[in-house]
Length: 170
View 1 (cartoon, rainbow, N blue to C red):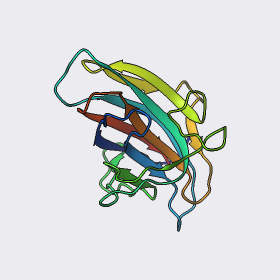
View 2: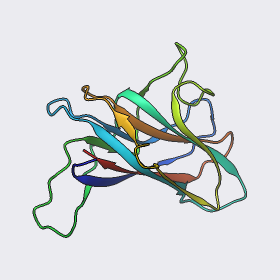
View 3: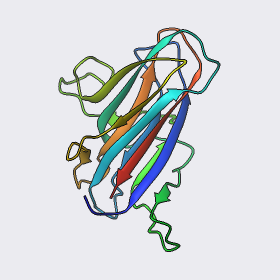
View 4: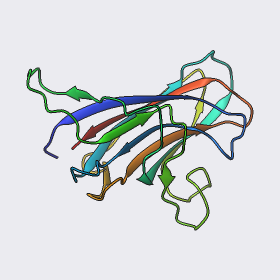
């Protein structure tokens, strides 16, 4: 998997409606620079006041990015060079509108069991989770305009803050 490596985080607040959560992050292919995205590491956790509650974190494929106050600048992860390439992917955090998640059943979203999610983790608010792809097991976004990945957490009643971080190659 050759290419440049990047990292970016997204933050949001859990809403008390688990059926309609607000996504923390979306990472999609740039409309003017078509490329592939290999998502190889995902970090997630609660960053608010800890409690003994469990939220479910979802990572899903999307065909359109979520909306936010503006794109987030990704951090280049290079081997100490000063000429690191800038990411051409579009990264949004603290989303105000949801990404268009891929669903395997029409009319359902990523938080509906088995309908388009790539990764689903039940996580206690006092814990953090790190997913690392096995060799050759990265999630790959097709080289199609605005396709990529999104991340969201859901809880039926908690309203604390959470974070999802992506590491990718493009």
